[in-house]
Length: 445
Image 1 (cartoon, rainbow, N blue to C red):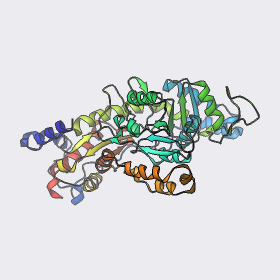
Image 2: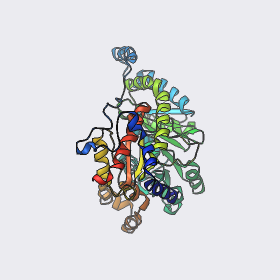
Image 3: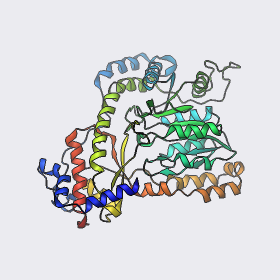
């Protein structure tokens, strides 16, 4: 696939002036000429307008929130709104149960604990992710073992999972990063063969799909985040979804200070170890309001992402993400692509990003080499980890922590914010036009 892309791009590079003129056609239609000076060097911006604001508040939700605040029923124990959200979110996701939590991180903490991740265990995890994913493993006093990334999909490479399994491995934690769907059939196949639990980090994957099923519903438990930047926001907040009543009852008990619930046997008022991970009433009311727009927004992002896929793929050096199956659907919390400097006249990624921002198109590099995060060595040098893991095991971990696919992605990735995908076709053309303009002025750097 990679060779095909490169050869096709080389063909584009050597194409006639007429072909390149087709690439830059949108500039003409909006009064721009792609040959104009880059905005970085004083030229006119390709994009002059503002992007969609986020988050977006619906004032119709305010009456219900004010009524709840005046009632004093602020926590879930004395109110009904958290339970209402749980029911509606489970229905939307196509699962039997949902448990609302204080954040996506607390959802992961509850899920890993309840599914048996314990001190001295090892958990296989995606390296291309937000810090919370592997921090949660450390909070359980377990060892995060990073499995290399497929740079084409931006996701964990299922073919590299089994070689990382040891006699201490208890779970796999695949991450649907940016809302992109992991190849869950392959992940589950390895998990079932080796009797491992699967906890989906779907914290960026609301309404994403894999083979007709919602992301977060394909493992033993799925975890979501509703932090302020998320596609379904409430400032802070999270959720766990699942279909096993016994597991979900234990999740409820654990998140509610260990109080008995459902099938959790009552041996005292607090029969199990637990912690307070509860969602507040106001968060639930905000989410119920935001849910009114999530499907419409998701469809808009999907339409615009598909358009960008087609247009950006024709520009040399720009390689959009690859979906693991043709019928998969990303949630597009972020829109990612790879920037291949060698195909872009050797313009560096930093130069490209600086130039694109100057043209009025916001972008960033995304995640880096998280498997070398400083907090990892801090944990390894703590007295707890020295007790739990032998010096030989930690030395082996360091030696095997070589992830060439993830390194490549960390060097090449560029991302657009989800709010940019809420625009119209004109907005998407502005993105394409800006990238094309930089490509056609690559000799200016």
